[in-house]
Image (tube, rainbow, N blue to C red):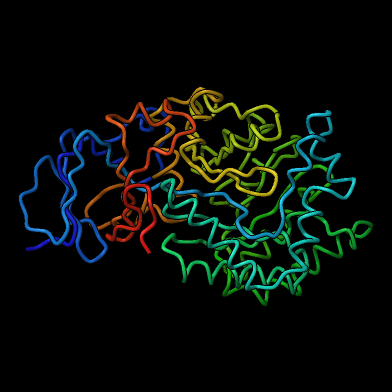
Length: 412
């Protein structure tokens, strides 16, 4: 039977195969096939082995190159207008993120700009960002709202995310983050904003989002408010996620276990008790070293969390305060700044990241029956992925069995 696509002679094929999110030593298992080959048909992988002799419409010789699953970026704030490069100097002068936020900057500056633009402009911005992500190997991305902070603009941003998913090769997974910050107009009555989310937003967005997220943090949303939002979101079919314990310990990791979140993200200040509870429940811990890099703050203790048995994933946290679109750079940061091994970081950026957005049975590894989301990297072995810092080593990207990036260029 003829294949639509055959990749052959790969120095290494990293299958990263797993039926569930990897923990502890399993993170090191990349399922490497040396001198490997992979064949796809009807957007799916149907053969993977050392040698495959089969006719194909398109054959790619991957000699001296690594073949692996497409990166899954499981935490981004993709849709917004404007940028905040002016805040870099403020951070260098010693101002913290919360201090910038309290002065009307940060999220609030982006909210002001995002509310003023229409869907067409936001779609155009999103398409360009997705192009950059695709060029660096990201084939699936989670996208959060959170820069509207009112019913009209949150719905606008969700509609943009859904349109991006239809128009771009990258799969875009929608998350409702209306609880990203207390809007300035509700600063003295945050509970009223929580009620607005529950009564006015949830009924209107139930068919536009898959997940509901909350920024549970000091001076943002309390544990009680986060619990209320996430519990109510579940009634509308929204799977819960949480920004937990990023700047201060709030008990976010413990709440993630109580609520049954699919993931809890950041976790820089999480307690040992909270991390252990998450590990017991199999909740994915999404670590975001790019955020630590751009805020110049501490990094999550990945080694300790892995030892506790937490299934760890990685994401860029792309947003106006963390303008990182390249998962390869995130893998390097995970190794150099969180002391993850290259194999652990690759597993965390593929199969575990896929499970963090409820896609682990479809993507994140190279296995028969899964989507043919495949990267061909211009390196001879997987250890080179974090070693070649700041370089785009992605030569070819295959999405759903079709070549969408070739020789570092987008194919339209």
